[in-house]
Image (cartoon, rainbow, N blue to C red; front, top):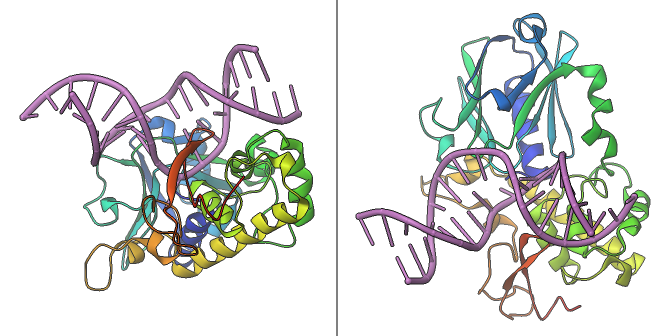
Length: 288
DNA sequence: CTAGGATCCTGTCAGC
DNA sequence: TGCTGACAGGATCCTA
């Protein structure tokens, strides 16, 4: 269930491990997970070299020497695993990092030069990979409508302009809206609102520009911290001693901590449902 | 145009 | 031991 920091972590892994390699073969285990025009796989994928690993919001982009790109979205359960001289995985944390691959959740497998393989695993099949010309990525509907990148430049003015269009929404739904600000998902929404001391069910119109800016700053802080911690990768999934780790422990204050004390005030963290999503907050620090 | 709910899919877990 | 419903780190589609 990767959000911006997890996707950025995957991007960095791919930059190191697959940029410069050639794609020799592709095996598609689930048709919906891999979309390409007729003949494009043969003409623009096989034999092409991976030139760049980019990210926009939660979308990963591998540019190829053929003028085409692999555009991927991990959605809820997508995961990328590299097997070669080293063994690396990122994205949705589960045992597929460790098992023999392909397995039953493998949707696409790439064979790369230098005896390496790249696996796209995705239990729920919501994720996708599209092979399209590099030049048309910016014309994709989803990409075109995205809000500003939180970790690049100064997103504040544009964020405020866009979130004000959602005055009647609850704040949590508004910051999950990718056309308002790019990259925030359920974890970082809850963590940001806790940091900014804003109740997730507050209406946007009832919040000041100052409060909204504080939420943005909080989101930037927690996502930066998460990237530094290494995202949800094999490394954070398995501790050095071989025991199972939990990368949420590295930065989360409220997410999946219902029933536990708030690290700031000691009140008991609650879990409720806000705009259809499980939502964690401190009833004492975050009042409407 | 915005807002809210159903929907895509597989797997796990709590509660009978 | 089974069954059943709720839920899951996302975004789109449909309706009002």
